[in-house]
Length: 197
Image (tube, rainbow, N blue to C red; front, side):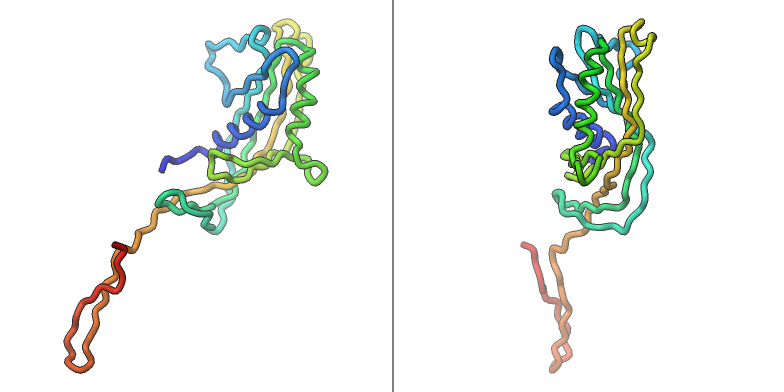
C-alpha cells in the first residue's frame, strides 16, 4: 500500500472544492498546490486568476489508535488529530476580477451555515477522512504596488483539522494445530484444528 501525504491530500480536496464553485465571468480560475518554481511566470492577465494553497507545519495530538477499516491486507488506524495552517492566496491580473472572486471564495469557504462558519469536506485521496477548514485571517492586497505590477491579491489564512491515519499489517492465521492427549493411553498427537485452505 502506498502511503499518502495527508497535507497534500487536504490541499487537493480544498482546491477541488473551490474549483467547482469559484468562477470568473471572463476566465477559468486555475488552482495550484504550492508555489510555482521561481522562474515560472503566472501570466495573470492572459491566463486568468489563480488560487494557490500552501500548507504549514502540522501539529499532532495523539489519540488512542482506533481502527477505521481495511485497505487490502492493512488495517487503517486513526492515531492522531492533525491540525495545520493553510494559506490560500487568490491572484488576479485585474482589480475587477478580485472584486468578483473574493465574495465567491468567502461563500465557498462556508458550506455549513448556519451551524458553522467553516468548510467541511472529505479528503477522497486520504481514506475519505473529514476535513474542517476554519478561517483565522483575511488580507487584501489592493494598493498602488498591485496596480504597478498588475497583480491583485487576497489571502485567507485557514486552520485545517483532520485525522492522521496509519496502516498496520497483522499476521493472518492460516493454520492452527493443537496437541491432544489421549486420556486412556496417554499418547500425544498433533491435529489441525483450523486451516485457511
